[in-house]
Image (cartoon, rainbow over all chains, first blue to last red; front, side, top):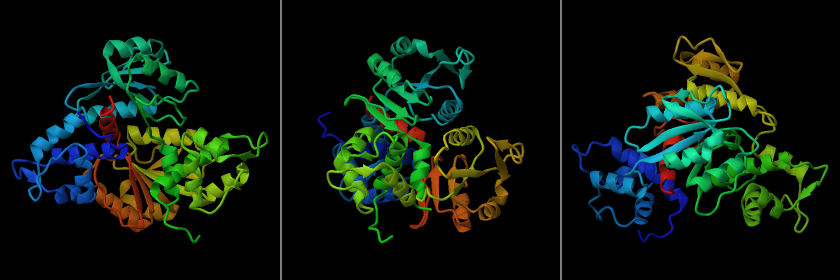
Length: 207
Length: 207
């Protein structure tokens, strides 16, 4: 794709642009200006133009962006033009809530949660929102068999790093981590941690 | 406090430093170098020193940081040296999971979830992890009576902006938002949005 290395903060804004473009009706107005898009997303038009410039020119100066072709382009850049299979480790309260939430909101996105993993015999073999819970002992073989490329971590355990290492060795390329621990991944793997407690603690600063 | 305006990315790293310092045992070693702290947190020593420099000098050149006094200082900066009362709107799967997770992990943090809010008559009056679910119609009076300064939003509804406006008028200073909508808040109020679907979509880029 001959791209410059794109900062992660830019990558994180692309789904926001995509979501906004998917809400708009191109039959009403097929073109949107960077000013309009920026206003809907809650950023500046300069930011929009700079973000998109990483991937080549989308819009024409003074004309704006074609909504339909820009949607397709953003899906292609984000690799959302193909199915991506996602696993989730930890079928507890948070894990179950995330699966249900995701299933309810998965219109227009090809990210499919295809397997849950847990250590609890009472959960293994059951389904949550139509997704089966597998024995975590079968992690490696299920990842390979189902071609899972992304893993969500929601289990509070001491051996998270070991589990992450197995995932990577089995083909997982990116992680969304809700476990409050520091994890190490190689440079070619992406790990993003979402920690509600840390979020609340940093928001305390603003109270 | 005579501070420069501190970037939000810096504020977001402070709880990570605090958590790391709270894991360490000062009886074993009372002082930590910026290199050691950086390694434990997963950043660089330059970043640590720069982040902390916003709040005045903590460590002595070539000596390091006093673990106990630095913990206290970080708690003071983050306003975690006082109780902060938190509300949560939307007592569904995600809301319930967040409350349970927070209650289980609230050691050493004075953030207390004191009220849940919902529209569902079947939920109102019940308790989740010892926290009562109130009628959202009483939002304003409960916020004032319980002195709630922070609100977590987990409900999928059309009128989220209206609910946010009521919260702000009643004294809420910061929001952690899990609802996938764009919200507007005045400059003196902090809103942070955590959207699992957007996170997964941006992680697709790395698969």
